[in-house]
Amino acid sequence: MVKTEGLSEDEIERYDRQLRIPSFGAEAQIKLKKSSVLVAGVGGLGSAAAIYLTAAGVGKLRIVDHGEVELSNLNRQILYSTEDIGRSKVSAASEKLKSINPNVEIEAVKEQITEANVHDLLKDVDVVVDGQDNFKTRFIINEACIEDLKPFVHGAVYAFEGRLMTIIPGKGPCLRCLIPQDPKQVTPVPVFGPLPGIVGVLEALEAIKLLTGVGEPSLGRLLIIDGETLSFYSVDIRRDPNCPVCGGNKKRK
Image (cartoon, rainbow, N blue to C red; front, side):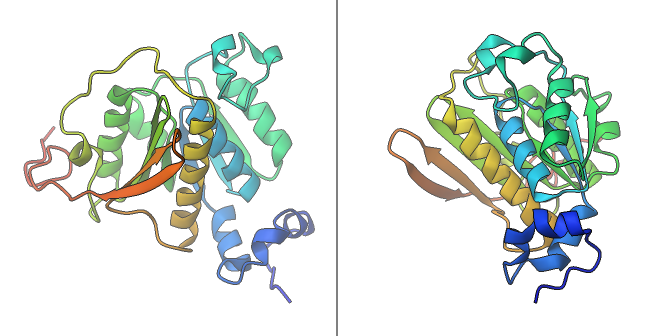
């Protein structure tokens, strides 16, 4: 018999399959229910991550994006349909997520993430999920997460390649350890539709593990997915002692 104190009848039935996992159960589900996640961007990566975090039962999801739905989004941004074209992404996404799981509080923020607002956006969240399509904003989020001691699940895609790395301040490398210099970036980024879904779902998995303490996060490892050959492999990443964000030469503001 699965112990389910602290969960409503609706939640017990809704989360039945994950409650049956011996290493998860009601204790982990209640931790998830009490948690808050920031999904920083609800495009291809963020759509998939937000759907699965909502379905799994996080307590609160803060979704941040300043864009509107465009026709060219629809090959990969699965939160949206043709009828949403021209709408605010966070407005359309909020409606869809609430329909998936009304138990989850959805906070929609239509803003571009900048150095000026990033710390406010990180307030009261337990984990940050990367839904960005550019490294300028990723570096802003990475630095703020290191300063505010927030775990950051990084994901990225390019053409047929996907990447994933979990960053925990003080316990491993940060994004700047992996990418010291600002990379040159093609705009718009070419993306094969299913790849952001794969990476976004894995980001949700990592976030849930961090929130519940179940399993081990992919710390200090970069997971690389080759969609053309369906190959998954990981590369060990060391913390750079001279990293300007998390190392001994951290810049002072």
